[in-house]
Length: 245
Ligand SMILES: NC(=O)c1ccc[n+]([C@@H]2O[C@H](COP(=O)([O-])OP(=O)(O)OC[C@H]3O[C@@H](n4cnc5c(N)ncnc54)[C@H](OP(=O)(O)O)[C@@H]3O)[C@@H](O)[C@H]2O)c1
Image 1: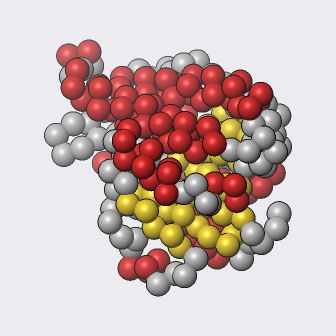
Image 2 (image 1 turned 45 degrees about the horizontal axis):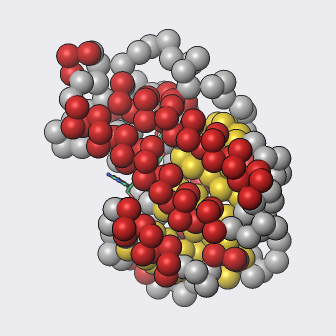
C-alpha cells in the first residue's frame, strides 16, 4: 500500500470508531483519515491532528448524500472504510426480554440505525468505487445477528437489525463482485467491547472477555490488512474466525 491512501470511519465519535480513527492516524501510510459523525467536532485529543478531516453529518438520507458529494475528491484514494455506527439502547428503551416489550417505534428506530443507515453509507461510498480500487470495507455487525447462534432469545430488535444488516451486506457483496471486484466486504463482530453501547450489559461479562476499543481497533485493522478481495461477504469475529449465519 502506498502512503497516498485515505481511510474513512462512519460513527467516528463512538467508542470503537474513535479508537479506529486514533490508530489510523498513528499509521503513516494514510495521507488523510476522514471521520464522519453526528458530532460537530472530534474529541479534543484528536482535534489538533492535521491529517484528520472531520465531517459532521446528521445521518438522514439527504445528509448522507450531501456528505458523500463533499468527498468526491477523496473517494478514489479510499483503501479502508469502516461503518461503525449503531444503537442498542437509549434513555427510554433497552433490548427487549419478552414479546410484551416489543414497541413498534423503537423497533423501527433500531432497524433504521443498524440496518438501513449503514446501507445508505455503502450506497454513497462503495457505490462510487472504481473498478480496480482495492478498498477494504468493514461494517460493524454482531454475533447476535447470527440466526443459527441464537439459543438465548431476547434482544429482538437488535438481533433482527444485525441479521438484516448481514443479508443486506451479503447482497451488496454479490453486486460489488461485479462492479468493484477489487474491494472486500466484511461484517465484523468486535466481541463485547467497553463502550457506551455495552456499558449497561457488562456486569456478567468476565474481565478477560470485555475488550478495550483499542484492542478491537487493532484486531479489525489487522483483519482488513490480511483480507483479500474474493467477491464474497465475510462474517468474522475479532479473532478473524468466521461466524455461522
Ligand atoms: N460494544 C460492543 O460490545 C459491541 C458488540 C457487538 C457489536 N457492536 C457494534 O459495534 C458498533 C459500534 O458500537 P460501539 O460499541 O462503538 O458503540 P458506541 O460507543 O455507542 O458508538 C456508536 C456510534 O454510533 C453512532 N450512532 C448512535 N446512534 C445512532 C443513530 N441513531 N443513528 C446512526 N448512528 C448512531 C454514534 O456515532 P457518532 O456520534 O459519531 O455519529 C455513536 O457514537 C455498533 O454497530 C454496535 O452494534 C458493539
